[in-house]
Image (cartoon, rainbow, N blue to C red; front, side, top):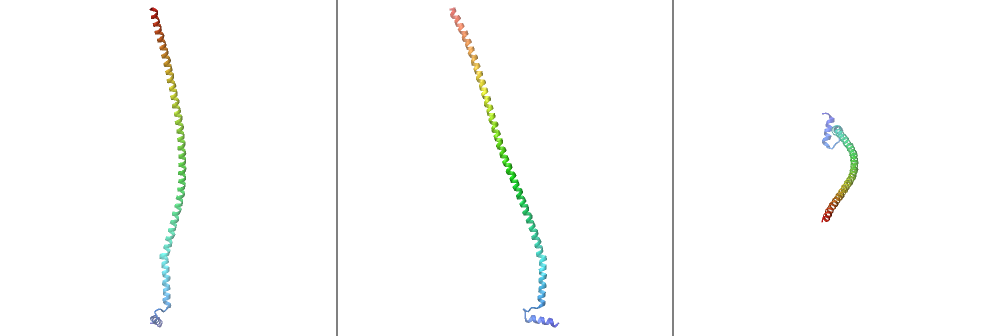
Length: 151
């Protein structure tokens, strides 16, 4: 064995907390290797994963905003359609009311006309009956007068 190794071995035996340059250097190299290994094995993949995840979240956020905008547009269109439908329904209701009123007036006028015709027909029937009765009375008067004259 070399005298240096023996000295270090003796010094390590005598003082367990002794600082040996080779041990420090060996531990520093191990630490650097460990840090590099952890960087490539853990930090880099984690960083990639986090970047990818952040991209996905941003994409989902953009899609969400686009969907909210399209939802607002669809809601506005729907509201416009509802307003138009209400206006059309009111207009149709008003037109139906006007049509019903005009039909009611037409039916009423037709009923008046028929009532007038019935009254005229009844008047004509009454006049004809009067004339017939008057003729019957005249005939009976003449028959009675002739019988009185005969007697």
